[in-house]
Every structure is written in C-alpha cells, then in structure tokens.
Amino acid sequence: MRFKMLLNQVILNRRNTLKTIENEVMGILKSCDAYWLHNGDSSKPHVELTSGLCSNGFINTLKALHELKHARRLADLIVHQIRAEIGEQQVDWVIGSPMAGITLAHDIGHAIGAKKSGFVEKDPSGDKGVFLWNRHTIGPEETVLQIEELITTSQTLMGVKETIERDNEHPINWIGAVGSVVHRPVSLPQQYDERKVIALIEREIWAVEQSKCELCAAGSERYRPKQHWDKLVS
Ligand SMILES: [Zn+2]
Image 1: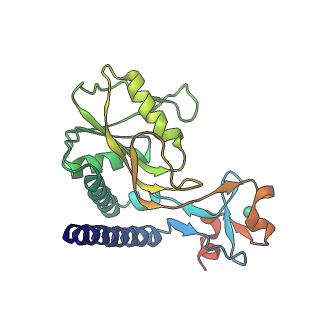
Image 2 (image 1 turned 120 degrees about the vertical axis):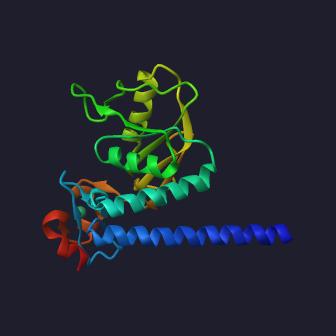
C-alpha cells in the first residue's frame, strides 16, 4: 500500500513537472509569434499554408530557436525529458538534420554531456528527404541520439536514421528516444520505430486541400500567418 502511494505521488509529480515545462515552452513560442492553434470555433479564422492547404495550426520553431537564450533553454528542457526516459545512459553523439536541427543538436549535445555532435546533409542531387552522412564515422561502441526541431511525419525522422545506417561504416547504437521541440502529427499517439519521441509540445495538427477543409465548409475564414498574424491571434 505504501509503495503504491509513493508511486502515485511520483506519477503526480511527473505530470505536474510536464505541465510546468509545457507552459514554459508555450510561453516561449507565443512570445515569438511561433505558435497558433485553432480552438474548434468555426467563427474563428484558420490557417492557409504557403502550399495553399488549410490547417488548424501553425508552429514555427525557428522563430524561437534563432534567439540564443530560447535555443539554450529549449535544449535544456529536452535533455531533462530525455534523461527522465533514458536515465544516466551515456550519449556519445547527438545528430540533427538540416537546417534547424543542426544547431539544436549542438546545444543538446552540450547539455546532455555528449562527446560529439553532427548532422546529415541534404543530398544536392536528391529529392526532398534524401540525405548524406559522409564526413564522420560513428564508432562501433558509440551511442547516438537523434534530434529534430519539429516532427510532423516520419519522413525526415526516418530518412536521417536510414541515411546514417546506410553510410556509416559500423552499425549504429541508437538511444531509445528521439528529442524534439514539437511533435505535431495528424493524430496522436504515433510510433515511428522502436524509439520513443520525446517532445516538449505534442499537438494534433492537420493540413488538407481547401475543398476538403471542414473549417472552410463551416464558414471560417483562412489567413496566411506571415501576412495576417494579427487576424489569427485576435
Ligand atoms: Zn480551410
């Protein structure tokens, strides 16, 4: 009984910590005009993406990450969450993807006590999501933590992993977690491989053709965030 009470207290403390962290991250993103989510009220406008698709949300982590104090703080918070998941396991490499994931991986490498940070590069002759890993060699005993600044689908996440496994001389010992500032798939929860996504913010965000947009059908106006941010947040 006493053990169960202690366990419940630990779980409660953990939930409170997660809520506190999420509130802080939301504060950072909102202060940079980097976060907006539709609240389900069709009298409120929604987002028109650059692609022309409609969406119920807009998150631009770059607007927060290019401010160094925010980048450092977000890296520290991600490391806090990853350590809660993996304990004291040694992390040798922290690797990100171009472009925004490169500096974030670097900051997280410092914060988590890694020896090295690195990044895959875009294949200049390839399509979107095709990468190269040909400047460094990860040793056979070294562990690797993958970092993304924003995860929407599995494309970049798995593209980076498959590239390093393809190009590195030795098999890769992946840390059992992938760190990210934001995880925003169409539906939650999502499992992409055996690793757990550790994100500071998780939201379900969809993007559809205007002809299939339920908010347009309900009379909600749509605006491009860059040009009409004030209309979205008012
Ligand atoms: Zn729409």
